[in-house]
Image 1 (cartoon, rainbow, N blue to C red):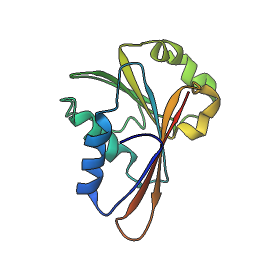
Image 2 (cartoon, rainbow, N blue to C red):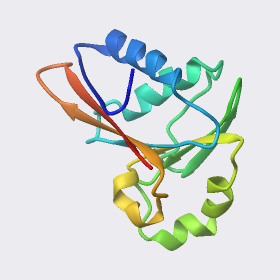
Image 3 (cartoon, rainbow, N blue to C red):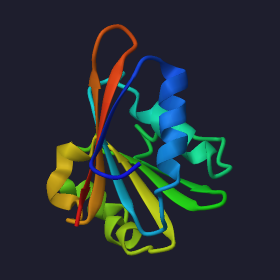
Length: 142
């Protein structure tokens, strides 16, 4: 897989395989943003991605804002959906998380607070298609 990259998947099994394939590109210090409507598969993709690194207890951080995981990598999993203003993000130490070059940051709904995101990031947009089909668009920003 070379970015930018677009892939259409037909079901959850193909989504899981796409996450495993993408995991090969993931390095410490990266910020990965997932964008898509409710039910698009953002959390599912992250669960399968982190399972590639031996992390199995992945839950949506909707109410906690951030979950921290340790496996073969350290990961911070954020969900911006319930945040009303950027100050809430900074109150929980957003800058400290961004500065942790030993971890991967995964952000669901990152498009809701774009001003908080670093310029350098990978953005994954997930779009609904027919039935269980989804289109994944991967872009890297430097």
